[in-house]
Image 1 (cartoon, rainbow, N blue to C red):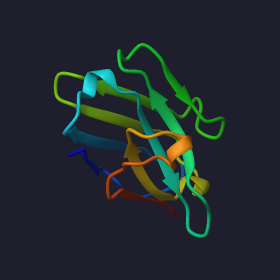
Image 2 (image 1 turned 90 degrees about the vertical axis):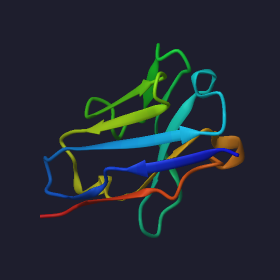
Image 3 (image 1 turned 120 degrees about the horizontal axis):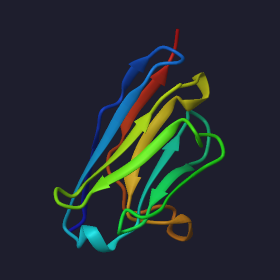
Length: 118
């Protein structure tokens, strides 16, 4: 059974930083692309970033490119999302997922809340 557990969210001021983590189990982690998605209140799920199995290529949405950095540790089955220069519009619940757009990014974990507020 795929299990994904996100952590690291919190309340931060604009311009601040957070690092999210996602611990994964129940599948061959080093063979799967991993994605982060987020959902702001009243909005649909938004893809944020994804990283290939070999940690060779990470891709980002235009809204976070240059501010967020996605990495993975295949030895420990964890992915990290370093979020810098946070903006109000980054507020939302962040989920890691092995899924993709075609299956609405399932499965995903319970998520971790990020709130950017002054």
